Structure formats: C-alpha cells, structure tokens
Image (cartoon, rainbow, N blue to C red):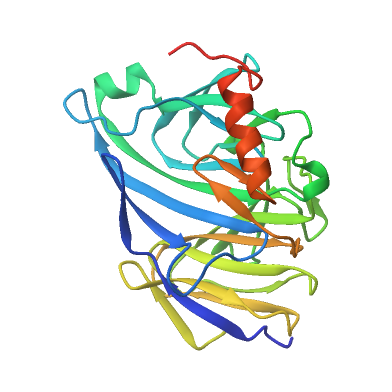
Length: 289
C-alpha cells in the first residue's frame, strides 16, 4: 500500500467558549478547515457534579450544516424543536442535520449531574453543500451497541463504523454527502492498515493515548493530536504505542464558499442575514428552556 502523505500535523490547544474550556484542533491558525469539516471541538474530560456543571447548553439555533456529537464518556440529554428528546450515553452518536433550521439544547442529564461523573465528547460541524443547506432538519441517534464494528485479526484494533462504509460494513447513520466517520480503539502494539477513498479529504484525531501514523508521525495527548492527509495514496497505518482512542474522518470536499456567523454556516453574507431574520421570526421552530 502507498500511504497518503501527511499534509499537516496539528495541535489541539484549549480555547474558552463561555464558561467551558475545550480543545479546538479545527480551526486553528494553521488549519482553517478540512473541507467538508468546518469545526472540531473536543470537550472534557470534565468532572460533572451539582456544584460544577458548565456544560449545560440551553436552546440555540443552527442552519446550513450538520452538528454531530460523538459522546466518549458520560450522559447527555438532547431536546430539539422537531420534538425529539433522547438520552445520549457513552459511545452513542447524535447526528443532527440542521438544514434550513433547528433549535436544540443539550447537557448532562439531571440524574448524571446528581450522581456525578466524567463527561467527554467530540462536537463536529460537517458542512452541507449549497443545494442542501435549506433541506428539512433531521435528527439521528444511534446507540453504541448498534454500530457495526471491524476488528483486526489479533483483536488489538477495533473500528466502529459510524457513517460511511469500511470492509463491506455500513455505518448506521444516513448521510447527506459522501463521508466516513470511524471511532478507532487501538491496544498497545496494535497495528492496522486502512484503505481510504482517494477523492476524500481526511484527518485522524487522537482522543487519548499515543499512536504512530504511517510509521513516522507520533501523536500524543497534550502534544500533536491531529494529522491531515494528502490525497496522494491508498490509505494510512496506525500503530498503538499505548491503549488509544482516535476519530477518523473523511469526506468529499465541497469546494464552495463558506460564510459563517455564530451558529449558522452558509455560502453568502446575505444568507447569514436571512438566517438571523428567520430565527427571530420563529421560522426555525420553538423549544422551551
């Protein structure tokens, strides 16, 4: 296999989002976006309790993209203006298609806050193409145990297929664009060669542990945690240097103008103004606090 060259190696430094401190590997000064992936936030691990619960996000709108949560640890309650209310648990994924507009709220469940525990997850913003930005909103919640999984022969590498396809197995999430999303667990000394679509832009993000990518680039927590790959090969390799967890993403680039403001991702400034107006006029629905 010819490995894809490593285009960029990125850090995942902390930023403040109101009362929440979280890691932001995309965007940074060196990586504006990895089309079609606009933003990647890694929140936690936080120790949640009744005395400490900063991650309680009240009702807020979105339009023009897909906000996605991969919950690594803990328990969150999701509510939205479509009428969905679901408890998302560790290993679950919630995939929201904001489309022309949705209002949602999320935060640790009251039961989880009361008993206390660790909360950690990934919030990903996946862009929608211009011709799908105003489609009807949708919400998908898939439980951890329902995902298809591919394992290495020695059992040291496990690939949970969230979206897309891998080794003939399909993800449980229905996607609007060509995209793959895998959660990869690697034991110490575990090794795997991954084939990827040459038409996709792709990235590997380290959640915990330490791995070597393509036999050359070592990713460690609190150091370099993200690798962006060139589209010049057939795939990449992962070798575990410790028990590790990673997120792999690949998608067909949209190659469109991106204009964003707060919770809206559109193609023009006029469309942003229209989103502000439509939200104020109640056209994105309603969700009680």
